[in-house]
Length: 318
Image (cartoon, rainbow, N blue to C red; front, side, top):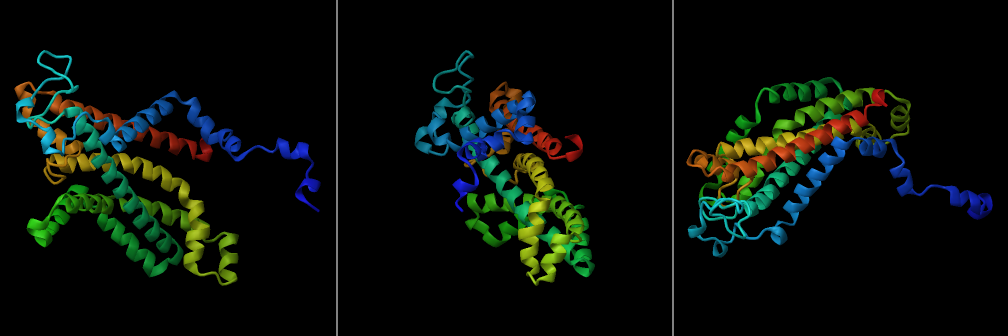
């Protein structure tokens, strides 16, 4: 018997589409009813899209020396006396357009934050799954390593890895090496939260019937962990990842402000703030203030999205 015969046309027409099912879900309803969350999502989307399409939006390319003139240095924003088009937010001490450097700097900050969060998540999830499923000595070793790791802040780890990279690469150390040093140092600072959360959830899931049945029929433990257990523990991980993304961006800005981040030739938002703070007392406040506002807006928006996601995925609040 065909599907059409089993289900009359009027029944098939009444079946909601997948898109309609998503739009009618509790998660979307919770998102749309919160004006603060919608505003945070819009701010995040605008900053991310502006960063992605920076080469098409920015009036000048701050990395192209042919588009930079030292004669245009320290110009105020366009609405102040002395401001001139196309320098909407003014220029810095090297004559670079501040608006353009913010767009390009946001790309670096967001890229480092995303890559560090992804690296920390992959490492923490894998270790948490193995610790919770294996138990015994494996669990003890991984958890003691997590305890030791949590005593070291990201700044110390970044200084250690930065010093190691300087010793290894020497004069060949370039922007690409510094980028991955930042990703590695920040990622190694945040994996502990993922590991502990996933371990706790795995301890609960491994005693359930579907895991016991999978073990009984001889499915490989790695397949059980990543195909059966992981989908059931991914909810808390998404919340941690969203919040850690904001923390990773802040950590990158802090490290760059301390001089451990990307060089001034390829600045992130933290590097721009570090450069601009030297000119605050000279009255050229726009060099540091506008990158700072962008960084604050991005981190606040991502944090608000993380708070909403945590509440939306909490069954006790439904």
